[in-house]
Amino acid sequence: MKEKLIILKIGGAIIDEPQSLETFLHQFASIQANKILVHGGGKLATDMARQMGIEQQMLNGRRITDDATLKIVTMVYAGHINKNLVAALNAKGATSIGLTGADGQLIRAHQRKHPTIDYGWVGDIDAVNVNFLQTLLANGLLPVIAPITCDTSGQLLNTNADTIAASLAAGLAEKYQVELVYAFEHAGVLRDTHDSTSVIHAINHQLYQQLLADQVITGGMLPKLENAFQTLTKGVDKVIIGDATQLNQLLAGKAGTTMTHE
Image (tube, rainbow, N blue to C red):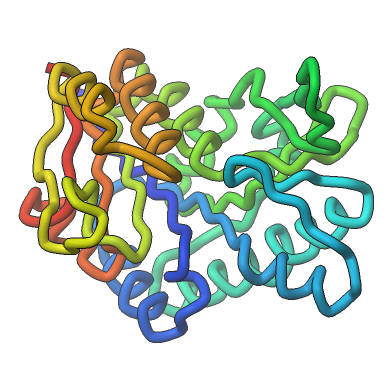
């Protein structure tokens, strides 16, 4: 019987709202299972870039990462946000260690190549160091991972946090019974984006294809669900999407959207 592992990606406005973040961290720290936290932090990086007079370009929700922007996201993601999350979790009794993909060769990536778009220092993932994560978890540590990776030459890269969480889940599914959770400020996958009560509580692959065809799933939810169903084909037990402040209910199947491969 495999041990349970919860890989949770926290993002969206939750990171910018102290009370919501506190509610989430309290629930997350109390989970009695192996767990990994992956975080983003886009708004703070955008605000800092604006203060420094560095123009930011976004394309399909992805940040074009030039030299100056790479410095900012490294400072904000791997520094300010990561260490505050680690400190807060430690204070709640969840012994945590802050990491990027560069630490311990945790995540090896390469610079994204596109025929027409220069994404700058944006990284796409090649491999995950599963043994390193197993060692940390076996020693009672909670990895808190910032979305910075590096390539084999030592170049740091800005990598999408949703993709990192999905890659970790797929890589660790052989060793653990993995549940992947995407937690943010919304109640789950909505049938009507203007109605927060229209949560679709369960989605299998057949319904997913139908929702795509009906264009119910659009915008930023598209890549989340694409990542979700890719991980399910690689052995991940389930994927949950929903409100970070309702984490206990999400894990109990009483809130949010749960995706399974059946």
